[in-house]
Amino acid sequence: MEEKNKKPLRNKSIRPGDYIVATKWIGIEGALEIINHKREELKKRFSANFLEYFNDYEAALSTEKESEYAKAFDVKETVYANEGGIFKALGELSAVAGRGLEVDIYKIPVRQEVIEICNFYDISPYELKSKGMVLMVLTEPEALVDSFMSEGIKAAVIGKIRDDNDKIIINKEAVRYLDKIKQDSIYKIL
Image 1 (cartoon, rainbow, N blue to C red):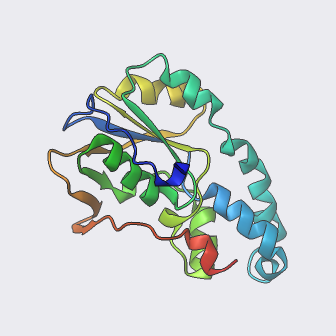
Image 2 (cartoon, one colour):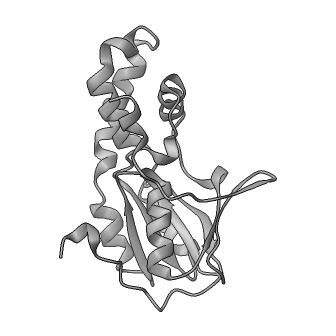
Protein backbone atom coordinates (compact mmCIF):
# COMPACT_ATOMS: atom_id res chain seq x y z
CA MET A 1 0.00 0.00 0.00
CA GLU A 2 1.30 3.46 -0.86
CA GLU A 3 2.30 5.69 2.05
CA LYS A 4 -0.12 8.48 1.12
CA ASN A 5 -3.08 6.08 1.17
CA LYS A 6 -2.41 4.87 4.69
CA LYS A 7 -4.70 6.20 7.39
CA PRO A 8 -2.85 7.61 10.37
CA LEU A 9 -2.94 5.45 13.46
CA ARG A 10 -5.14 6.92 16.13
CA ASN A 11 -3.31 8.03 19.25
CA LYS A 12 -5.65 7.07 22.08
CA SER A 13 -3.57 8.86 24.71
CA ILE A 14 -4.68 12.26 23.37
CA ARG A 15 -7.52 13.65 25.50
CA PRO A 16 -9.83 16.66 25.31
CA GLY A 17 -8.13 19.64 26.90
CA ASP A 18 -4.63 18.60 25.83
CA TYR A 19 -2.70 21.54 24.43
CA ILE A 20 -1.22 22.07 20.98
CA VAL A 21 2.22 23.68 20.88
CA ALA A 22 3.73 25.02 17.64
CA THR A 23 7.43 25.67 17.12
CA LYS A 24 9.06 28.19 14.79
CA TRP A 25 6.94 29.90 12.12
CA ILE A 26 4.53 29.09 9.34
CA GLY A 27 5.45 29.50 5.68
CA ILE A 28 9.23 29.81 5.95
CA GLU A 29 9.91 26.97 3.51
CA GLY A 30 7.36 28.29 1.03
CA ALA A 31 8.65 31.86 1.26
CA LEU A 32 12.21 30.67 0.59
CA GLU A 33 11.00 28.70 -2.44
CA ILE A 34 9.05 31.69 -3.77
CA ILE A 35 12.13 33.90 -3.41
CA ASN A 36 14.26 31.35 -5.24
CA HIS A 37 11.80 31.19 -8.17
CA LYS A 38 10.52 34.78 -8.26
CA ARG A 39 13.51 36.83 -7.12
CA GLU A 40 13.50 39.24 -10.07
CA GLU A 41 9.78 39.89 -9.73
CA LEU A 42 10.12 40.36 -5.97
CA LYS A 43 13.01 42.83 -6.43
CA LYS A 44 10.52 45.21 -8.07
CA ARG A 45 8.44 45.25 -4.87
CA PHE A 46 10.90 44.57 -2.02
CA SER A 47 14.38 45.83 -1.19
CA ALA A 48 17.44 43.63 -1.62
CA ASN A 49 17.93 43.74 2.18
CA PHE A 50 14.41 42.40 2.68
CA LEU A 51 15.09 39.44 0.39
CA GLU A 52 18.54 38.77 1.88
CA TYR A 53 16.97 38.69 5.34
CA PHE A 54 15.49 35.31 4.39
CA ASN A 55 18.96 33.76 4.12
CA ASP A 56 18.95 33.60 7.92
CA TYR A 57 15.79 31.45 7.79
CA GLU A 58 17.46 28.43 6.17
CA ALA A 59 18.44 27.15 9.61
CA ALA A 60 14.77 27.29 10.71
CA LEU A 61 13.94 24.34 8.43
CA SER A 62 15.65 21.81 10.69
CA THR A 63 13.56 20.08 13.37
CA GLU A 64 16.35 18.14 15.08
CA LYS A 65 16.37 20.22 18.26
CA GLU A 66 12.58 20.07 18.63
CA SER A 67 12.56 16.30 18.20
CA GLU A 68 15.33 15.92 20.78
CA TYR A 69 13.73 18.26 23.32
CA ALA A 70 10.32 16.61 22.98
CA LYS A 71 11.80 13.36 24.30
CA ALA A 72 12.34 14.99 27.70
CA PHE A 73 8.66 15.95 28.04
CA ASP A 74 5.43 14.00 27.98
CA VAL A 75 4.63 14.80 24.34
CA LYS A 76 1.74 12.59 23.24
CA GLU A 77 2.00 13.30 19.52
CA THR A 78 4.20 15.17 17.10
CA VAL A 79 3.13 16.34 13.63
CA TYR A 80 5.50 18.08 11.24
CA ALA A 81 4.05 20.89 9.13
CA ASN A 82 5.25 20.57 5.56
CA GLU A 83 3.36 20.72 2.26
CA GLY A 84 -0.05 22.32 2.78
CA GLY A 85 1.18 24.31 5.75
CA ILE A 86 -0.14 24.44 9.27
CA PHE A 87 -3.78 23.99 8.24
CA LYS A 88 -2.96 20.63 6.65
CA ALA A 89 -0.84 19.66 9.67
CA LEU A 90 -3.74 20.54 12.00
CA GLY A 91 -6.04 18.33 9.91
CA GLU A 92 -3.52 15.49 10.23
CA LEU A 93 -3.26 16.07 13.96
CA SER A 94 -7.03 15.93 14.33
CA ALA A 95 -7.13 12.65 12.40
CA VAL A 96 -4.42 11.11 14.60
CA ALA A 97 -6.18 12.34 17.74
CA GLY A 98 -9.53 11.09 16.51
CA ARG A 99 -10.93 14.36 17.88
CA GLY A 100 -11.49 17.97 16.93
CA LEU A 101 -9.33 20.89 17.87
CA GLU A 102 -9.58 24.59 18.54
CA VAL A 103 -6.80 26.96 17.46
CA ASP A 104 -6.44 30.72 17.88
CA ILE A 105 -5.06 32.01 14.58
CA TYR A 106 -3.37 34.93 16.36
CA LYS A 107 -1.27 32.56 18.46
CA ILE A 108 0.20 30.79 15.42
CA PRO A 109 3.81 32.01 15.01
CA VAL A 110 4.32 33.88 11.73
CA ARG A 111 6.98 36.29 10.50
CA GLN A 112 5.87 39.62 9.03
CA GLU A 113 8.14 39.02 6.03
CA VAL A 114 6.21 35.85 5.16
CA ILE A 115 2.91 37.72 5.43
CA GLU A 116 4.20 40.44 3.08
CA ILE A 117 5.25 37.91 0.42
CA CYS A 118 1.94 36.06 0.76
CA ASN A 119 0.00 39.33 0.50
CA PHE A 120 1.97 40.27 -2.62
CA TYR A 121 0.87 37.03 -4.31
CA ASP A 122 -2.55 36.85 -2.63
CA ILE A 123 -1.92 33.42 -1.09
CA SER A 124 -2.50 32.06 2.40
CA PRO A 125 0.50 31.74 4.74
CA TYR A 126 -1.51 29.11 6.66
CA GLU A 127 -1.57 26.82 3.63
CA LEU A 128 2.06 27.45 2.61
CA LYS A 129 4.90 24.96 2.95
CA SER A 130 6.06 25.14 6.56
CA LYS A 131 8.93 22.71 6.98
CA GLY A 132 10.59 23.46 10.30
CA MET A 133 7.33 23.95 12.21
CA VAL A 134 6.40 21.15 14.59
CA LEU A 135 3.05 20.65 16.30
CA MET A 136 3.15 18.81 19.62
CA VAL A 137 0.31 17.67 21.86
CA LEU A 138 0.73 17.43 25.62
CA THR A 139 -1.19 17.99 28.84
CA GLU A 140 1.16 20.48 30.46
CA PRO A 141 2.86 22.65 27.82
CA GLU A 142 4.45 25.43 29.89
CA ALA A 143 7.76 23.71 30.69
CA LEU A 144 8.21 22.59 27.07
CA VAL A 145 7.52 26.08 25.71
CA ASP A 146 9.88 27.62 28.30
CA SER A 147 12.57 25.11 27.38
CA PHE A 148 12.29 25.87 23.68
CA MET A 149 12.28 29.62 24.27
CA SER A 150 15.36 29.41 26.52
CA GLU A 151 17.17 27.71 23.62
CA GLY A 152 16.10 30.39 21.16
CA ILE A 153 13.42 28.28 19.47
CA LYS A 154 10.13 30.10 18.98
CA ALA A 155 7.29 28.11 20.59
CA ALA A 156 3.71 28.92 21.52
CA VAL A 157 0.57 27.22 22.77
CA ILE A 158 -1.82 27.75 19.87
CA GLY A 159 -4.84 25.70 20.88
CA LYS A 160 -6.26 22.58 22.42
CA ILE A 161 -7.92 19.28 21.64
CA ARG A 162 -11.72 19.23 21.75
CA ASP A 163 -14.19 16.59 22.92
CA ASP A 164 -15.92 16.46 19.53
CA ASN A 165 -14.87 16.32 15.86
CA ASP A 166 -15.06 20.05 15.10
CA LYS A 167 -11.86 21.62 13.81
CA ILE A 168 -12.26 25.27 14.76
CA ILE A 169 -10.07 28.23 13.86
CA ILE A 170 -10.74 31.31 16.00
CA ASN A 171 -10.00 34.70 14.46
CA LYS A 172 -10.89 37.29 17.12
CA GLU A 173 -14.69 37.03 17.37
CA ALA A 174 -15.02 35.08 14.11
CA VAL A 175 -15.05 31.30 14.13
CA ARG A 176 -14.48 29.15 11.08
CA TYR A 177 -14.04 25.47 10.48
CA LEU A 178 -10.82 24.04 9.11
CA ASP A 179 -11.22 22.94 5.50
CA LYS A 180 -9.34 20.02 4.02
CA ILE A 181 -6.31 21.40 2.19
CA LYS A 182 -6.28 20.21 -1.41
CA GLN A 183 -2.99 21.80 -2.43
CA ASP A 184 -0.30 24.01 -1.04
CA SER A 185 -0.93 27.69 -1.79
CA ILE A 186 2.54 27.95 -3.40
CA TYR A 187 1.20 26.12 -6.47
CA LYS A 188 -1.08 29.05 -7.23
CA ILE A 189 1.99 31.03 -8.27
CA LEU A 190 4.73 28.51 -9.16
